[in-house]
Image 1 (tube, helix red, strand yellow):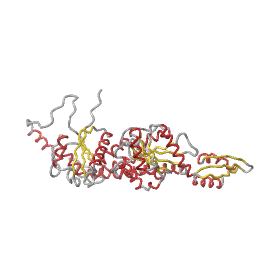
Image 2 (cartoon, one colour):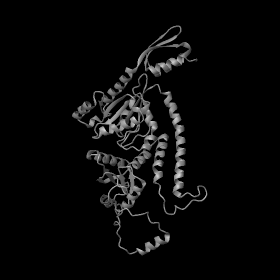
Image 3 (cartoon, one colour):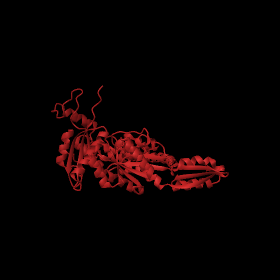
Image 4 (cartoon, helix red, strand yellow):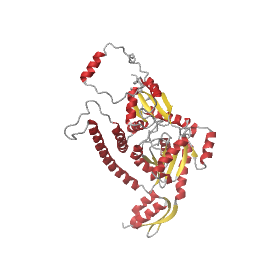
Length: 456
């Protein structure tokens, strides 16, 4: 049985004076990928150069009619509020129009798909009134960029924590966009007397958000306990633009079975795995949610947990899609978000991934522009990922110091902790206990000394 046709969508974008043609085209191309990820077929694009969004319906009257021709709408924003009709008036109008000329689209044969788009996707954050006006003018469902991203996050979230975070962001987005519908605007009786149905719905959303925040706080406490247990371990966080290849690198570096997909926001849940083959001490690698231009602030705030992985890491790997012509702008988006949370002070390495998709000249240009510290590689090339693994080890090795630890026989049970937190160079015994020559980070050695000195 053939699958049902995907909804058709039209992209709408306004090019402001400070945005050049290349950047505008890249923004719309990215919006198209977002729409495709959400399950739409993008069939057309309507753009206009303006100083600002049109207050009524984002674009001007002429472009609005052009858009409506693609969706089957009238292309005009009706003046005033939509007319509310009683059942008697609706019946009278239905009877009075019987026999009139049919100006709707011709009936489709069974299995035949409409050529009209049913969704309009706007590459800007728009107000609820602008969305309503666009819907009335086009007869299509309207989503802005924020709405598309929130919907994608809602579909892709897997863990309980991610689901709660996305639900909070979704409800925060939906609340101001609730609409009064005919028959529900009357005042409510009983609890909340005096509220309209819409006011009651908004209060329910506020209560639900409060419940979700309580659940999230409990989960966050458990997560913080797990983080505290590994605070002295060597930690690497993969950060970067969405679909830059972070999950592919995660799989190559750790041998884990994380999801790898060529779509935006395939990863929303923080995954932590050990570098493989394992090192002594262990190096933990975490994959994080990807960033994107105009990422809604509510989602940035909601995904604080995945951003905290970057803030608390010992080393950040900035992953950039070298094959994307807008990779410089994408790198700046990543740096901007990390700058907001203070993670730009964490030591980092710049990785240009997907090198298998660019030529040698492009590789040299990247290295020439970003210096010797940058690495050009492909997550699909074992030699590249093996070299990256060694680079990570070398970075931590340079920060380590070598010292001797003495473990009395009464505390021999702690030797296992030493092997987890440090690399043991040598191990000797005398009549008082065990002497270990170790290499580790200064903080880890200080913690071990404190553990040996504490009462058993």
